[in-house]
Amino acid sequence: MNMVINMDSALCPLCHCKDLRILFRAETVHSIFCIIQCRQCNLARTYPFPDDDVLHVHDTFCYYGKNESKFIPVLQYIRDRLSKIRARRYLSMISTSIQSPRILDIGCADGRLLNSFLEYGCDCYGVEHLFYPKNRFLNSDRIKYFVGDLESLDLKERSFDIIILWHVLEHMDNPDAVINRVFDLLSPNGLFVLAVPNFSGMDAKIFKQLWFHLNIPWHKYHFTEKFLHCLVEKNSFQIVKSTTFCLEQGIYGIIQSILNFMRWPKNELYEAMKGIFLRGRLLPLLFQSIIAVILLMPCTLICLIASMRQEGSVLKLILRKNRNS
Image (tube, rainbow, N blue to C red; front, side):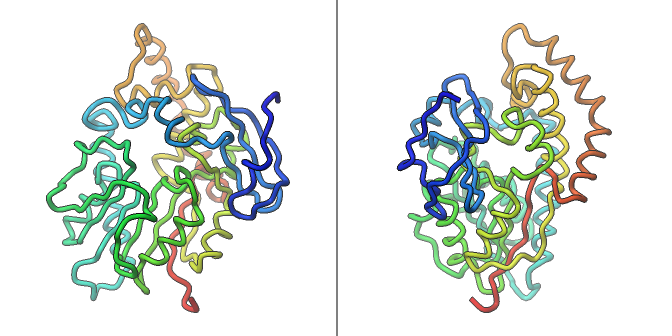
């Protein structure tokens, strides 16, 4: 690889080690990046580090979707149903004595999951990035939305019964500081739900730069199961449950990675699901859709097998504060 890495700027942000290795190169329309990994703690990250100026060049409106919602209506309906299932499941894990649970969704997007919590009488709070289209926030008269960095927001410590980081930690500038902040905000008996793409998963190892969940430059960090477990335990959390199975993102992630491997334009079908179409690409998209349907059953089986080996596409952790902390 021709990219020269400045060791001073590439120091591991967690253990400050200089012993790095380049795993592979990942290209976007605008830039070339490398995925580098610390040999000491195994944290992998995108280099050069994609700050907000870099992300702005990569068209945030395309990333969030150009229409009023991120995805086409049928997918939005499915997301609504899944959000309601998740809200009900997480509430079943906290004490029934809590009359009005306080929920904090960090990286809440349009507040779809929080909107589901409202149905159960919860007090809901959401945090989003400055770039996010604020006109999409759902029920903004009943959900309190904050825009900006989590560390700088004025939120009451030890006050939230459920805190959710659903595919958000990989976007953050400082994951260690974010997990530490979550610890401060979570109530003593609260529940912390954390999900990230699994960089140690089977499809990540096979597809590398073509892996759907790599998502350069939006994903700044790439977490292995070993590293993520160390990170949460370092910040005084205990793991209640850990799984690598994710119904929608796991199965589709494998399908899209295969389509990428077949040399269709990267993530083209996924972009079409957001209503973003390139001129003259209707027939190729039809072919990709047919292939995706054919792949659905075998990829579901692959996803199940990989998850049984703890090598699925997504790392999902249910966490509580360590009793000794």
